[in-house]
Length: 338
Ligand SMILES: Cc1cc2nc3c(=O)[nH]c(=O)nc-3n(C[C@H](O)[C@H](O)[C@H](O)COP(=O)(O)OP(=O)(O)OC[C@H]3O[C@@H](n4cnc5c(N)ncnc54)[C@H](O)[C@@H]3O)c2cc1C
Image 1 (cartoon, rainbow, N blue to C red):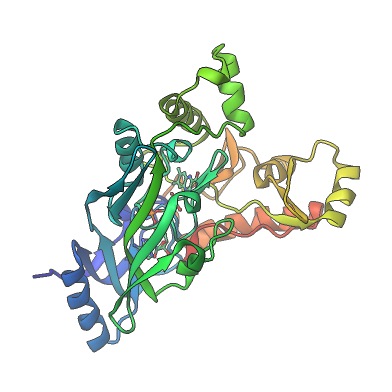
Image 2: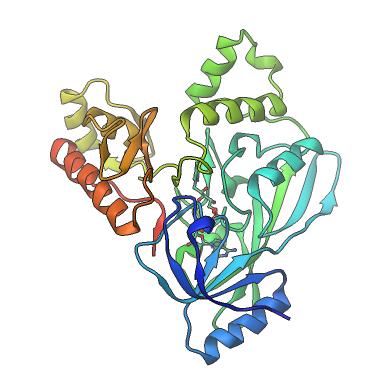
């Protein structure tokens, strides 16, 4: 039996703490409840919004359809040998708790992705990434319920079309991710390419050759806690903009004017550090109309005075316009705008 609430306030369910109402709301604990609710949505011609931890959403208006809060739980080892383990994970599990569970069991790979807010099921949606790793490198397949034909389907990793902050699951309203299947290693295989991680271990005089995955997890937690505000006290959605990708030609022009430009080479183009661009425009700690950028990290926008999504987007536009004017770069907003 599923309960459906009307006119539900989503303010405590999104990490930017934007006040927004959902016409209908229900919490989903399993597939049967999901199928029941989809029937209700179809019969009442309601659009479906899938909600995890609400850490990658900006409500610019109320949701006139039904919001489904995902609480599908469960972590199961489905296969293992001496070297590897395969896990089936309910999409409503908390991501960071799952990362800690893997390390407690000596399953390695996800340590660089510690402390990312939200649910396991939202991870594949934007192919979450941090500190030199992306979730796509550990996913075997993703199980979904197709919201149109109500059939359970699975997408192998290659069919998810993962790339930087992208996947086919951004075709919103089509699939509800129900389970994610991971392959993790039982052997330590550290990724220590990210400069901030290297500096962290150098600062504590720890030789990189003796660093363990648990050390990496602790380092990531510590670095993130210094760089990112805790959304429970300071509402935010983490990185507000994606790191823009520009052509080689554009990069060379900019590098002439800005020798300190922070950029990472891709195959045929360059990924530019959005935080650096915003910083150069003088926006670190910039405040306007009860909204500001975080003083320790200009890429993070914080909603200090409980402003609306529209006001936050207006604030972001000031930053986007300036970055366009100075660098001829369009900053794309990372979270989904409702
Ligand atoms: C402080 C902070 C730090 C962050 N750091 C990072 C970071 O380092 N790297 C990074 O990649 N992201 C980061 N994020 C963004 C965010 O945490 C991730 O995108 C996360 O995966 C969102 O999870 P969620 O459950 O909160 O998703 P929600 O915000 O609830 O939803 C996000 C989108 O996914 C859809 N969705 C959610 N669950 C499902 C499902 N089961 N099936 C289908 N669609 C679904 C929603 O409809 C929505 O469109 C950060 C956010 C914050 C607040």
